[in-house]
Amino acid sequence: MMRVALVNPAWTFAHSIYFGCREPHLPLELGYCKALLERAGHDVLLLDGPLTGVSNGELADRVAGFAPGLTVVTTAPTYLFWRCAPPEMRIPRDFLLTLDGRGGRTVAVGPHGSTTPGAALAKLGVDVVVRGECEEIVKRLADRLDSGQPGLDGVPALAFRSGGGTVVTGGPHTGRFVDLPALSWPAEWLERHHHHHHRYGTEPLGAGAEVEASRGCPYTCSFCAKIDFRDQYRRRDTAIVLEEIDRLTAVGVRYVYFIDEIFLPRRDLLEALVERPVEFGIQTRIDLWKPDLLDLLGAAGCVSIEAGVESLTEEGRAALDKNCRMSTDALADRLIHARRSVPFVQANLIAMAGDDAGLVARWRERLHGAGVWANDPVPLYPYPASPDYRRLWGEPDDRAWERAHEHYLRQFARLSDIQEEEPLPLHELEAACGCR
Image (cartoon, rainbow, N blue to C red; front, side):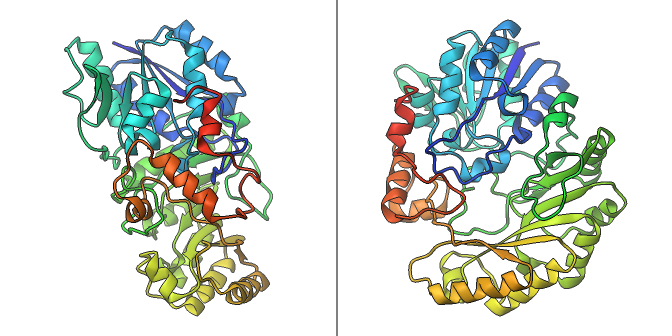
């Protein structure tokens, strides 16, 4: 039996270009790790700084008191935001500096090590980096260390230092996922989880939570950072998803956000949710939903849809590899239909060179008049795990995050209204915590 600490550090995002939500969310990847580790007989301490209001210093002290043989820290706030993670690794590095060797072997999981393992090892100073989806690999790593077998070469999807160089035991891992067990969370965490992710215009009642019904996406849009994790589309068993939701509603949760990259039409799940006391939000593509299934989505309790439209021209959507067969007018009609049964519907737009500002303004005005929100187009960040990055510079190297960040700051004088107004260069963000 091995003692394993799993840590979601105390995040701050000052001067970051971070696109994701800054409220606390359930650390699903660490929840899965805990479930699989405990099933294998290991002793696990799961800590979450944002949900408990605990600093990195106190998190480190709690880990030290647990005296683990293995401490795992994530480099993104939760699986929901692996595709748009903070480029900087200052927060997990701050936790590790404070831990100061008191947590046994240290392991980093997340998007940074998945795509740029050498950079993650160098910046964080951890012993091991897990590449790709982490829950199965963390369990295998703990099993290996507990067994006393020499070396880590037998565990796939790892990176670590050895003999003055970096050893990589394989490419990023794709988990089985479909039968991951239903998760349970500490009652005090859920009591503090007041946030209903991406919910607007309706009164939030009860606690919120996050759930995963599917993972990955069958599409390969050029901007989507999922090449090295959460790429292949898989559906989690419906009975397990419902068991997890029933556990949540039994302790007072009344809203869940499905973190799925793309929540595809799934009649069996929607029909089962009709009878349950829970509302929910999703992200999806509106062109994949027929009107009758949108009506069922609303009847099942959906109160928030975030729909990726990205570009208002067929040429623009083709340039993004959207593989969308609907016209712009048809997309608008489908969004407006969804709004009849779902209280909040958002169309996501990306800022692209050559956009017709008048067309964007008219389209947004039409949707706003029908009660559908369309955002001010968001500048595109070429995350190293995206096809866009590879088109610009080829395969990511140890400077991939710096290169993407410098490009982004040069390209866009005005950022999106969801971002920090004064983002700093990456080297400045990471210098204070010694990420070099």
